[in-house]
Image 1 (cartoon, rainbow, N blue to C red):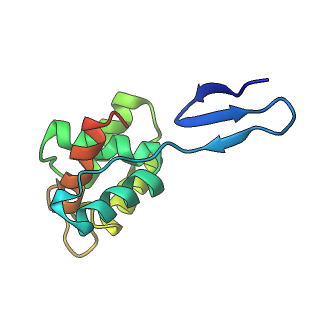
Image 2 (cartoon, one colour):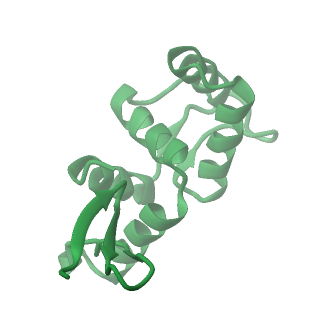
Image 3 (cartoon, rainbow, N blue to C red):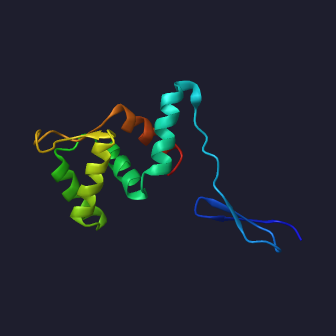
Length: 130
């Protein structure tokens, strides 16, 4: 009557034959030498951003500076098959969270760039295969 360990996505299932399964999230290991603010930014990004938003951040990092939010949304939509409106909505969310900068109603045509917080998060996501 031992405990069975299995991996399901990023969760671990602990199963006891007499009780219901217990889900435990793995601990997130973060280098704290860069400070508490860095740790907070990374924890926020890992726990609160959707998988699509994490993928978009990584994509922006890979392609470098994009022309505009609209151009980036169209290009990413074509490459992934996600709808343009879904991509655009997620890009706006990332901009509102100050993870990227880019044009808006008052600042049309501004290129899309990762902010310092966005760069910290992407660096962590890439190193930890999120």
